[in-house]
Image (cartoon, rainbow, N blue to C red; front, side, top):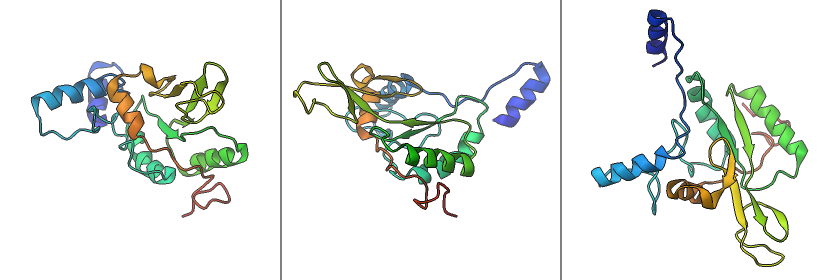
Amino acid sequence: MRSVLATYQAETGQLFNLEATPAEGTSYRLARLDRRLYPDIITSGTDEPYYTNSTHLPVGFTDDVFTALEHQDELQLKYTGGTVFHAYLGERVTDTITCRRFLQAVMDNFRLPYFTITPTFSICPEHGYLSGEQWTCPECGRETEIWSRIVGYYRPVKNWNKGKQEEFRERRGFRPVASRDGQTGRAAS
């Protein structure tokens, strides 16, 4: 696809972009349409169908962030725009040294153009910020609002479409580690 884009650019003098589309809405909409038209089609999601964005791994594939990074590193370099690797942690980053080592390991060992550290958090109307996914406040028992990154931005999970909510339920957070070897901040070879 990139070579075809280069040919089109040479022929037209126009710039073209090979982008990893985020598919916030279409991942659900198209999976629903496909299930209706082709009942035997394989989609993600048990209660609600959805497709995984672009060439991302299925959300429940692994809890090992380095396995996911190794898989995505070569793929994301094929795009000329719209790429990002989200490290879904599932909870607050409390150890800044471990986070710094992890970031350094990613920058030293992978060529991904963009990546995010994405903890999930909750908001209690009475007590405010809560670390991680907590459906009720541990202090007062009130229902909370869960926030996570839908693609490139944070939003309350309850405001996502049904397909993205299903994706969130199936998402496995990555285990918090500084590096593949757990010590130096460098991935072990």
